[in-house]
Length: 299
Length: 297
Image 1 (cartoon, helix red, strand yellow):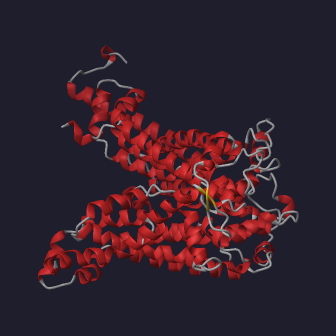
Image 2 (image 1 turned 30 degrees about the vertical axis):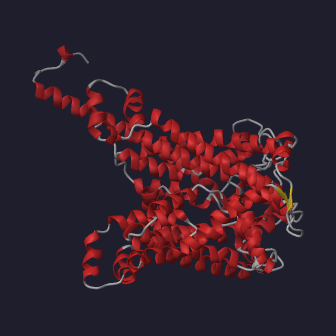
Image 3 (image 1 turned 135 degrees about the vertical axis):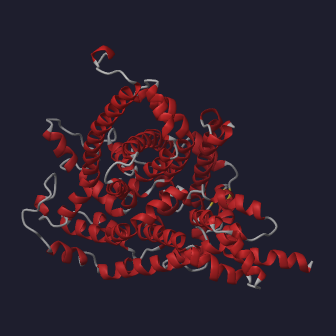
């Protein structure tokens, strides 16, 4: 549109027209964005919904069927799946719960100890230890796996949960230490100093001041710890050989090893149950999880 | 002496669990695996010194080692950039206070939370089966899909798609980075009649460079380490024709299926060096393409 066709050429009018044009363009692009985002979310979420649908379908309807509505609802898939392996899923879920709960407790306690030392206490050699701690972020689990296995084998811990749990009490997850350090540093130092003048010991300060103020950070670490331990596959794969000790992911894997028999419905039913705790955690703690990632760049 | 002790006591007391873990479960095992890599060791008999034999064999004769390297590199080089491009695209669409952003964010992040689970790996095997959902969708468009899982030409793509599907966490980090870019820059560029492409390359990319770099390093390390997906989808062996023989899968099998702990330790050290090298390259080159805001004075 050329300037000559516009009536009344004051700068205010031009600015007004410019703003209107901008608003119109913003609205158009917002609509396009929503279309793009909705389509993308549908593609993202479709496989998960498909899995849920498959868990209710009769076996002959599962393969290649794009539909999300079972021709008949086979709720038996769930009860069949629960007892499909020689050991029932009650045992697997119990095992997973024991390992996960103890791991979460261990991670939160030991990592917050280390983080408190790094963030709030002075001691010689701190910078070196800190640098070493940060390097362990990079080390792949596969590199330490074999010597750790030999160590635990010699301790007689293989085929028990100790190799999965004890390391969590030794602050092995540098991610969590880092996350907590970031959080502790935001707390005002005056609190510690005032408490110190009042004669509080460092432990008292940790317990009575730092911890209560850091509940969001603790919760974030606990949630991630829960999710990662619940999903962990390699650790249980290496250390647990007896089916009655299996955690849920190992049990699921037995489903696909024992093929031949077509048990797709029950298999998906158990898959759905296996991710249900994570899904619930995600729905309840979504805000903490998302803030935690933005804060620390966790995976 | 006493003063020194008192000053350091609290710090080391709180650090002690980590210190024990660091020596027993991190640095100790790393050194132990270096030693084991020079020996023949099958757990039952004590290690026998071999010197550099494992490394010579690995680089000169072991076809599967080279195959594993090739598969892993291919996976890293294709999946990481695609994942980051996708993450950035969605983050940009979500930026600037779009309505229902919370919903989108949660939906897009969900696959990242579930993606590492065995349940999803099992699901993926079914989706990419020849009679599976992916090929049914292709058939709707009149295309005949390949045998994704059985054909070595295509099998890696199932895992690449699985990796891209989990673009949630780089997306969240990009989103935080985009928020930090001052809006005035875009407004000023618009007054200078800069189009969206110009704005993207002149403002978004340079200002976001530190975040892109951070995501790149993190995702590369993650990709080198990935294991469960390849293990489950390939049935534990890297099949078909070793096309899914990720480095980690090869290492696991050498160690725990064949009990060649010494050789597997040598593989572990190669993996460690590769990851260290890539991280170092990313850091060194970052000064040429990453500009931190506060360095400009």
